[in-house]
Length: 220
Image (cartoon, rainbow, N blue to C red; front, side):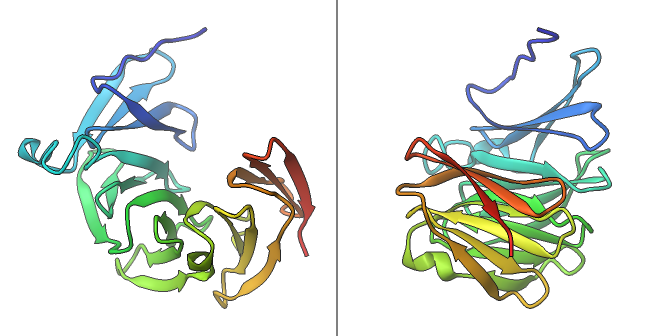
């Protein structure tokens, strides 16, 4: 065990490494982001994208940060909150650069495209939104999940040409990142898919489900 990093919050909901491996970022139930230096174990920063009066205004989970991720160049961070908010942060200063209102249920997962130009966001209503980092506007909504429960995950292929998203009925869907069209639906799990990962070469996809199986899929 290298370090035990003590959060100032009651519950830590997400953790992510910086691209250079020097820092770890945590998202918490009270809406804060905490950053640590991995080598020393020192907390470097605690960032709040809200006023202290907002905490608990609509319930203990109202500002919860369910997910956070770094941009590929490590200069920015995207975070997803229970109250439909996605925030972009300057990773060096902790300044909030942009605030996006998803208006489609709580923002659950965020994922940067490999080129750093687009952020994918999942929500409780079953869709995946694609946001332009440059304009702060939605460029597409992938909504096939809406017919089968919430979208629990979204991940970009290593080359950025495809996205994979998972849904409540156990299906994985592959999307063309250019056309925003569905390529195929991978069916085989009998329950929710909670985890998925691309192989480094982008030719296979692994998925893990509540049905107690891990499946390896060939990507067309």
